[in-house]
Image (tube, rainbow, N blue to C red):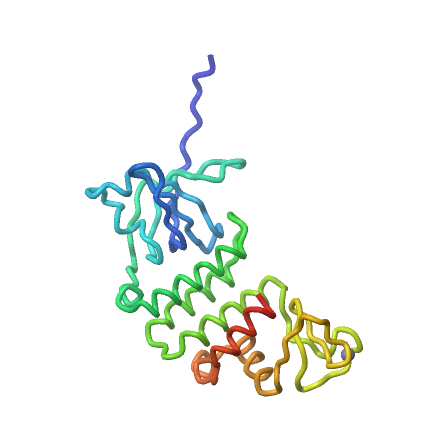
Length: 231
Ligand SMILES: [Zn+2]
């Protein structure tokens, strides 16, 4: 019998929990977004017990340091020993709109990223937008802008130079399946974007100035259109 035990690889890693799922009676599975490792799946044993020191830190959208037993290749669930919160982000818990926006950003990252694939630029962008929720008066613009920048990061969206069929440039036009078309070449199920809507879309996706993004007149109808045409 082989009794040689491999030494445990304990690491301390800074991250933010995007999703926290109850598991069994007392455990939690955390999807933690880290700069160095991308999304890590951790099991925090006993974190759901009322007396657990890890109970608060295992909630969603709290920045923390995770003392983790990192398993080697082929393992996708690592054991989290200890959670030390560094920022509780209480502003998200004070206001349902802010919390909803924060959860929306987290969800966008979760559905686009494969676990354990580092994405440092996205990690930075996520923190900039999550921090901004604290003072922002235009949550819909923040959400739409983050989603568009995420698509850009993934190479799934770029503002077109012209119609996908004929290449001609028009100040307005139609979107279908993330592609742009002129009136002559629009597919059956496409959505019209006016020149003004087009400019808003451009600024949401490309502007680095968050105050400018927040000043955009973004209507619920435009949000709906962006969601249907581009996500
Ligand atoms: Zn065309």
